[in-house]
Length: 350
Image 1 (cartoon, rainbow, N blue to C red):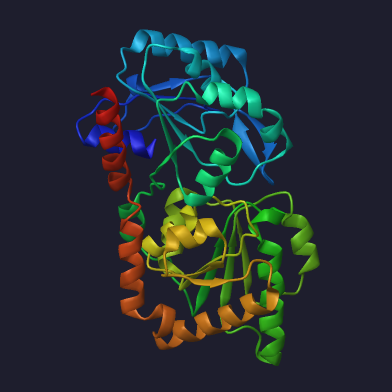
Image 2: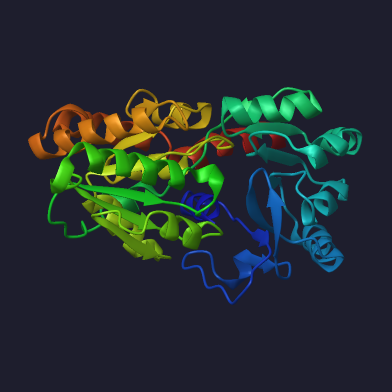
């Protein structure tokens, strides 16, 4: 949606074909710019759950829309995901761009290799959001790829009104599942609390989101001081929390091809502490404090340092460091992404 809106702002016409689980009204896109392909269902994928449409009816709707739409280019995101993407690949008269987002392969991904390679040959241009995503796609499909990155509505986070805090604050946001590393973060927070004795941790931890591990983790850490469980929060509150938090902690264990939450944090001027995994390192450049994934002691030490920096306004929380991180986030703005794809579209059409 964000890329389509940015393309419309640049003077192009963009139509989004996608499943939708409820009524949608996207200001700036309009009803004519959205073709819904039915509902999605949750499908286990890459250590998480992906909502996808696998209804044959959704595929038929997509094919009809392409044949009737008079499009110059069709852009498929995760083009080999089950569902309408395969149907779109079968429509032969429109130039096609495919962007690969996935990091890490699974049994199904490997098993579909021959079929996937055949389908991928219908793409005129292949793109990937990170070197990690490129390696995953090329390992299964071969071929060459354009490295384009991902896009974030940077201005929305930069302009957000900061959520009020009463002291140094750390924010975690993400689905509560093993891959996202919330359990590691809570263990590190326990270590930090124990090292401070009766005074407890020198700050507050906001935990946003829900997931299959929520209740298990809350029972496992029932007496963790200074932890606020926020549950599911909306987009506006997320932006405000990011702008108010001193630190964003992204302790994922792997499987992240890019790191949108890292970019959102940098755009909102929250110092970032994250796992040293390729997707996060690529998104952050050298503007985040990276620690080995799953290393409780290293994460605890990084949090202690970050909270201390938040109090003193030095280190990763120094204004100059936050300025550098904000500039890095601008690299991944939705407008920059739209400009990048515009060049790819024009070269393909020409």
